[in-house]
View 1 (cartoon, rainbow, N blue to C red):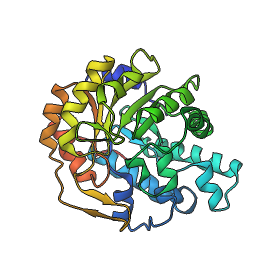
View 2: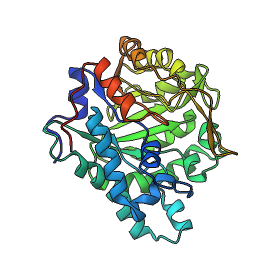
View 3: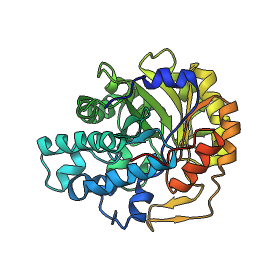
View 4: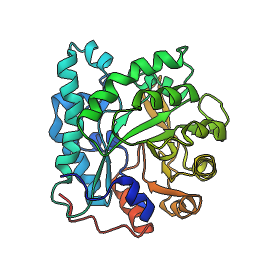
Length: 307
């Protein structure tokens, strides 16, 4: 069942808790994510694990579930011998699994269909660099079929997420135009700039005046980078901020391992809200216990009845 209110309406009324990292929760459930499709492989091989991960976040207090389609692309599925028709069904399944997990919560739960960057399909860490050598038009052509397939499954919003540079942001917004589903735009940033080194105020400005965009912000970044970035996002667009940083650890693409210490303190959310964030959660290595603590800080706890 779809929620009674739109996400845009809910954001106008207050803060909403997003979920956390899907991959780390799946690994905690014993899933092997070493495949190039990452968590998207389980859309075919273990959908029940994805639904269980969504349920864990609902129980922690999340009221927005991001689907397992981040790394799910027609090109990636084709490398595993999956044709376009089957791939379209798997993309739709990502929305269906989140919707199914939300049944019986007794509250509005919004499903955000994840649209990851081009670099996620390459599975080599290039989504943290951007500047792939492709034009905006070429990137739009890449993203449009997946966006159309996800939109057909009727999510509540498309999460255009972990965007490393302005060219890809422009391509994603063009590809989503006319799909009939609202979007949020979320950059991955470092040191006050996009991962490609671009000015953040200019990067966020590509969403200004776009009525399809319901929130703008950052994800998959160090928590220390969030507050200043979301303040710029809100100032540049006049839209609610969306923030879901990772734990503060850093992904070593060569070694395929996380390094460093966690720096995600749920108490930081007070400052994020003060800077304009209205949609708050976590990304890589942020699990249900941290989301539960975040929900408590935001006065949005009490999700233990979910599922």
